Image (cartoon, rainbow over the protein chains, first blue to last red):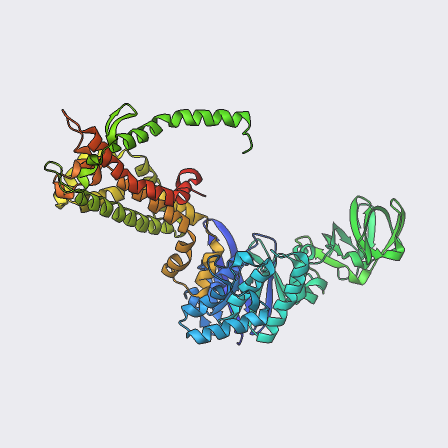
Amino acid sequence: MKGQSVRLESLTKHFGRVVALRALDLDVRAGEMIAFLGPSGCGKTTTLLMIAGIYQPTAGRIYFGERRVEHLHPRDRDVGMVFQSYALYPHLTLFENIAFPLRLKRTPRAEIAKKVRQTADLLGIVHVLDRRPAQVSGGQQQRAALARALVKEPQLLLLDEPLSNLDAQIRIQARGEIRRLQQQLGVTSILVTHDQAEALAIADRIVVFSTGELQQLATPDELYRRPANVFVARFVGHPPMNLLEGRFENGHFEMGALHIPVPARHPQGPGFLGIRPEDVTLDGEVPARVTVVEPLGREILLTLRLGDVDLKVLAEQAARPALGAELRLGILRERVHIFDEAGARIGS
Amino acid sequence: MPLLPPRWRLVLVVVAALSLPVVAGILWLFLTGSFGEVHGLVPRGPLALTNWRFLWESIGNRPPVYIPLLNSMAFAVVVAAVVVTVASMAAYAISRLSFPGRSMYLGLVLMLHAFPAVSLLIAIFYILRRLGLFDTLTGVILVKASLDLPLGIWLMKGFFDALSWEMEMAGLVDGMSRWTLYWKIALPLVRPGVLALGTFSLLSAWGEFILPFTLIVSTRSWTMALYLQSFIGEVFTDYRLAAAVGLFYALPVLGLFVLGQRYLLNVYSGGVKG
């Protein structure tokens, strides 16, 4: 099994008057795992379905390697796909479900049996192959769907929210397994998800979508440390980044009576200041009052009132302040994120 | 047996009262067909097998009973087959494919479903005459099947609509053509609908009277309904013979109803899903 690179060139999709995807350019490297991340209706699944060949693009080009594919039937694209509902055929056993793509390729009987067992073995579902989808657990259905996608040894694996119907515990285990398999097989993969933790955990690179447009393409690390705009800043990270709206003036960010010192790269005039909850210390000079205390186990999440805005702050368990306590915050000046009036990131 | 709550007992009484005439009719059919003489619902005289003599001899100038029997069977089976095949294909296309005029077509089908078939009889008569299909079983089959199709299409569309789109997308990615998808995935999954519609059209065609009555003349093309009708004379009617024929005509339906009840419930109570 070998992965293939995928290139999208100004890929566009309209549904009637609705623009689902606007001129997307993207390079997916061979063997890489890319996550499409965004809220529902942002165009990520539409993009995936165009790559699979289910939807025809309104405009633009799709290349697998050097081959243009947007006019090919899905069966001629050599992709495997896993759906959110798993989309197994309910009237067939898991064996027949997994064998289906091979039967359609007129693979010899003996080889089908061998490959189905191999793939099922890889996913640990050999013992339930003779059952129907309704007779196995959600986790097993999910693996069967993955097996069906992998059994034909596709060049490209497409995963549409494959984990969102699983229980929280199985989900984390399953995402680890998907990543392990993907790396072991070296198959180029695209994962669509609305769960930023999932994307951050298993993707090599992440594409953040919003309202039919690419917001940022970056590694998980970069996405977290250098969000390209306020949308990404809000969407990636949990608890989310604090975004304050105010004015930048001569080395300070001003919001009402509040003055926060910022690095010199800031613009003059209105803009947004982004502060991650972990980039705040409880010893500094910005006055604040504790309004909510939420213990998270290892840490506590504080909601603090600064002037007339709320700030979420992660603090050590040991430093647990009382409700209503007056504090003075320190904001790590080199860690703040600065966005201009339109929401675009300024500086590195 | 636990006692039913009073409200349900009342419902039962009402249902029983409403069914009484039907039950009495069936009872009459049984008694009159079986005994030499019946007054009202009270048999007088011995069991009489002679009522069933139509089974082994031709009555008057009527054809032997096996001819209308075979005709009725052929009629019902072919109509059901045509309705199921055409309706499921049409319904799949309407449910899953987008083509120009789709919504107009849907509206038209619904309108046809509501259209009283009898008002078309004269036009149908002329069309069949033109096509040389008047007084043939083929002609009546075509007419009956087309009249049953609108309901069939709507019913099957409901069943196809309930299938998940993701499953069909999975089928396409797995390498299926639309045709394979329909045949190997969609059709097996709407089996209850196919069986329901099949049973429904079979029964409906078996009981059809007005179409054969209008469109068939020669006795060799008679169906059972026409055969039975021929015993109801304008002046004299042998009710015992007519009852026996009626019972004979009804038996296959009873059998089929017992077998197909489960699927029929899909049509009558489940209605059109989705």
